[in-house]
Length: 426
Image 1 (cartoon, rainbow, N blue to C red):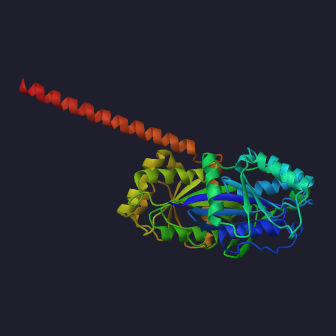
Image 2: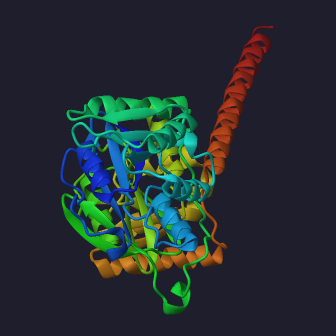
Image 3: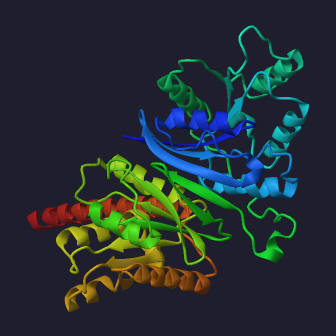
């Protein structure tokens, strides 16, 4: 099974960290000859499959720019964290032995202090060799880098002339294991805007890089977390494209959760495609793992579950999927469930699915935007309520208690039958 690895690239030299990012992904996702950071502030995101991992990589080539105020820095750090929500597993700090002084160290401390949890335990120091032949690095600068490596638990990777991608990924995977699978939390979600930013209506932007194609998308103040459910993977991908207004190749097997993001109706929408839970090749344990994962990928919770009815009618497989979802997530999921179809439902199917949630027909981007508005309206009515991992755990406890009661009832029924037979023979 593919694992997910989210990372943020940090460093003073934009060309060097872009080069490292391209090396990790095995393709030219970032421009290694980009203009100076001050020319245009932006974060860049790229995704891809590498080794056994599906990687989301955020490139931040501007955080060490001295022209960036501390308030602007906090906003940018927050944005870079949100682009790989619920947070990066690894912060890759790219350093050059001959180009990192005390002022840069102070800037690094400001970046780390803008994070809400312990950043050092999630940081990997990656040093690149940029010295001219026969020259030596300043011993003061070398000492600064050694101190940083020590503070980051001696997690250090030397980016040599022929580095090993497998070795680098293995170091990161070991870090994640050592950290118990935990990730760095988001930065200041309510960080103050840069001077004049709010008045002028100017928000920072990030660029998304997919196969060399870059898109500028405004940073959105409020996010919306959606989970797309259903048995047909192709239809789920098609609906995702309509909702997000973008086409993206499937990153891997449909047996794992796939997370995507885009701007819709003035919000940053996080959309998780959950694999089919009924009539699937997944084991029961894997079904439970993926169902929990789809909720955990929507930090702090799911605002709406979108269940696709692909044929415009309820098949036995659709009914099985509905029942499986309700059994796993509990009866409370109905408060967050929307039924999605690309075909008009016949009357029996419409009456059947309406017991689960609202039915929405989606065949265009306009339809998708109307759906988002409906989700927002329900959020307003429920004061922003969302389905959390705690609610998921509660549903599992409730299911276990229900199962235990059913077993006790069956045992009692068997005892009553035995007693009845004994009384009849007497």
